[in-house]
Image (cartoon, rainbow, N blue to C red; front, side, top):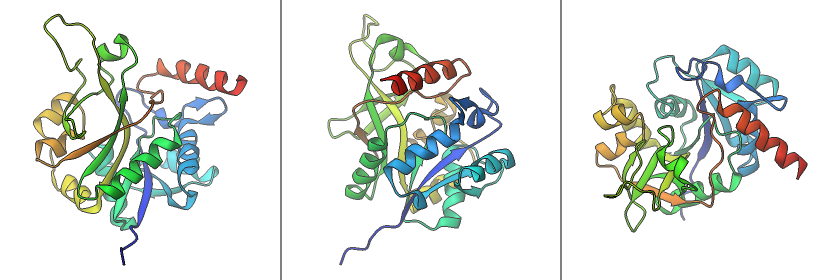
Length: 248
């Protein structure tokens, strides 16, 4: 009989963001961003499987008001994945699904696709990606671009516009969608690395820590990404999109 895997969806949330302090608690149409993300996750899996991992009392207090389960982690986590590793020391799951706390419009189907792909590829790290819509996304340094093999194994990820060509034109590309699945062993390994790897540090892309250590990452293509909130200027874009959805 096949063992049923225990898993949880964990949303890492940091209050002291260098690019956007207090980002998880920004108001988006009457709810905090972290509440929007939590609610989207609860549409993908049962709410009992969804947790918020944070080192902030402000985020914990806000989350408790809308009924989310919170795991407190240390202030010394280098990345959100390190925060997940600390959370799983408490949860003791076979694998953890990471949904970034700045994805208030994430499609529940993306989360379900990552879970299903992990179930079929339990020896691998799994990450989502989608086609780049236009050249502005391709050129944006805030969007990680993905290069994968024919079997969708991650070859490299960069904030620079890749793949390139001699004419420096935009032909095609894929971008990362920040939903991941990690086994407990992969998380333990990640957290034993006390410093960022060179490419991870240079690109500011934590998934590269696995690539640099010869751990395969399976990319799963999804139809579309949401609008992530990286900078304060992204807030208005998200609010406009939310209002357009409510009026449609």
